[in-house]
Length: 360
Image (cartoon, rainbow, N blue to C red):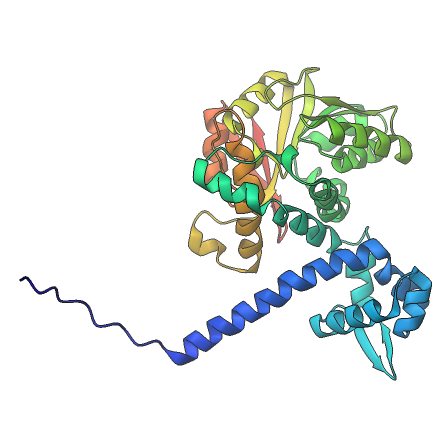
């Protein structure tokens, strides 16, 4: 009988193992507290603390129409997580920083939308498990509505802080065109935040937002009307390779090109809809060009979101290129070149965004 020599198991490094278990415990807490953040937002608990100041659990429950016992436990958990401050004597409050991050929807530091969107994505775990087995993907439209709303709430503060003030001025000649009365197409516009910001900042410019998801287009139309820009920001149901209405001076893709099944086809179609001298604006999640470049807290979030949302969304569409949310500038440059663009540059950036310009 042949004897098989089996390798001697390497004994674990107890310190490394302990650190890994500690990390897992922290992740357990993050998952659970993420749900508690969504509950606190839905019930107005953060907003009540921000407006009333230091409160007891009973006072907070009374202000929000909730049950004291549940509110007390929520406050303890949120204090342990660092999202609420314990003042002593059974009183809790929000610091200035906590209030900005958890209640101010115009602040770039506002984080509630991210919690809302990630919690919604996690609700699709059964369908996503099957998508891993089949490669059939899971369309954006197949997720819970909280994903759409949370994504807008997550991205809008950054767009509001940067789009008009920094990103548009960084593009070649675009600001002058828009001030003179240009035409903009916002592809994959979702609930319309970016379209509305552009229409508000450039009153002589007309903006058309396109998205294949009809409920999002309906919501965007309502948002534009509420913002008083429905006369110059309109929305249509159309896919990225199907929209019409050009020529456009600016065609935008805000955090969506990597979600598309056929990004090369999308940019090829966009090139055909561009006016002479027109510009493509690509806003994509910040990423380096290698895995090693992205092994950091931002990459941890974007890789996870890409696994749950972006990659399956692309796989559910024709072509299914599945760029992923951490495609990086070099890969995006290849896509633009394949679509016929000869000019491609990084116009600017933020810690969370690559802001890229493409021209034929």
